Length: 358
Image (cartoon, rainbow, N blue to C red; front, side, top):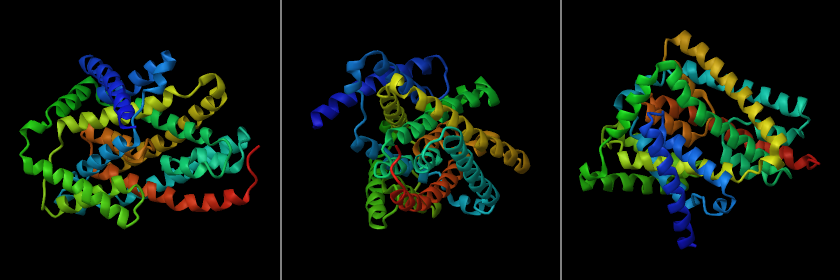
């Protein structure tokens, strides 16, 4: 099992790193993130045998997420507490956007496309993708449609956000973000105690997250513990260059590996529905984010990343790469995730009473 995982990781990372390096040389935004996604997707799409070995094992994804939680928590410095009051308006706006986007997606899928109600609702929930997909397996026969809708939404955000950065702030902003990434301290320049603190927060945070039964304990446990230690000024852990690149390769490669396994001919109708639903949902978030950014005098892309449902890990990583307010982005996505997490049991209860979709 381990040798098979190691083989899959080596091929996936080699493909992701090669594509990411090429995009980095071309000056593309978030090069390792987009490169890993498109590189792995393209290789698997063109060479069918490669699909069996292009994969990121669950244990590696969880391990990287533990470290990502620590780095995100490190963005909560002592001055962030005073900002919570400033975020109240945008948080309410994000909650309104979530309700409107869910309603619009449901109206499209259930009303126009005649999806069964439970299937339509699971497909258009803007977030909690792993939990939603897991719940769908026991509620609907076409759980792969739910997975496809969520995957397409995340991939769309992945691809559109770096392009928006270029359009809104220009190529200079892209080059600046890439320079910031390359300027992060490397593993070799860090004292051993810093790495020990990094690993300890990740492991202890995960254990606490499991003990407290937090949703996504491998992310929220280390994030909350790291945030607490950094807000109080006890620790100050820098962003590590190699780990940030590793996170991009892992998350982008995982999305690309899932995309290359979707057989377009069989799922063409669902793929079109997933794309249109994603555009509809993202459009509503983007519009309300623009209204709030203009009203509050905040940078549009910062508000957009705080709003847009592109996956907790993925959007947080984008905010980290582009130098936006990671604490604000994380706080908003945590609130949105908790909203979705609270609704899922109600959907599950109603779905079990409803007839299975034909």
